Amino acid sequence: MRRDVVLNFLSTLIATFASQIICYPALASIMDSASYGSVLVGMGVVNALGTAFGAALDNTRLLTWRSIAKPGGTGGYNRLAVIYTVLCFIIVFFVCRVPLMQETNQSVALGVVACIIELKTYLTVEYRIRIDYKKILLINIVSAFAYIVGVLLLGLYDWWPIVFIAGEGAALLYALCSTSFLKEGIAKDSQYKNIVRTSTDLFLASLSSNVSAYLDRFLISAILGPQSVSLYTVASLMGKMLSMAATPIANVLLSHYAANNSATTRAEVVKRFVTLAIVFLLCFLTVIVIAPFVLSVLYPSLFEESLRYCSMASLAAILYILGNLMQPTMLVICDSKYQPLIQIIYLISYMVLGLIMSMRFGLMGFCAAATIAALLRIVFTFGLSYYFAEKNILEQDDLS
Image (tube, rainbow, N blue to C red; front, side, top):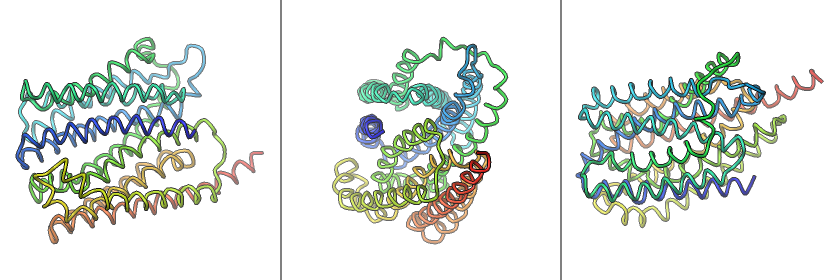
């Protein structure tokens, strides 16, 4: 398991370096802060929806594949993936074209990028089922090199979506060549309805979580303007980079918890929470120390103005990550219906506090609101995990 965590961490570190250290700073260097803020809002829509659809399918297959693993069993995962791809494109195109008022060709491109992300996210579940994290490392290396190529193409075509089409498209091509997606087809069987139900629950949870993750861009843009989006994004960069590195750790944990399929005690829930809390306290202190240097190098034009928000914005991002890393335990212990419930509570508190506090205290108020909402999410996730851990053990004892 430690080896898997290391491989997954390294693969994400490579992809994070390509996107956050090369791609986004390159875009910021050729745009004013308002235009760069508009790009961040558009990509927020793409990532929120593309990852939500893909993660729903990914986690559904990971949690239900045992019941489909029989001769002739397909479940219908790929059929649902095709349906999700069509829905993803339509929704992203509409949001980018109408509310965000992006150009038509740009909206089409963003819809394509969202579909690529959705399919790539889903296809990598095959690596996770086989616990083959070498393949995940390879797909991220491919994506990283393609992102660098995309940045070079940006100088020739002066069209920013080409960076993301190149980076994500190369990763999808690798996934199509290294998985059984094309061989399986889109047939379905008797398990299809159960797959749709589970996937719907997880999609709602993932969408709520992703919208919450990018809601900062949407709310800040609407209330304070796109320039403030640029400032907040730079201020929270180090915390969010940690998020990208920590997310695969949660994926590895879920893979092993699902494979182990053993009862989780309350003591184990507390142990996992305390371990994560200590790790992320150290991470927060590290971010505070290194953030000024890193941001001054990557974003020299935005560094000074964004630095005053760095501590609070990073804390909010890190608390959000901690909540994400507690979710694998909850996914295994609790019924899937509790996932969207917690995310909806978080989303509502995030929106209400964000609106009220940003209108009254500006960008610093928004940072504080994000921190409070992340703490509430942690409390609910830990509380349900702790409660159902004991309940599940008692039920297993009764059955035995």
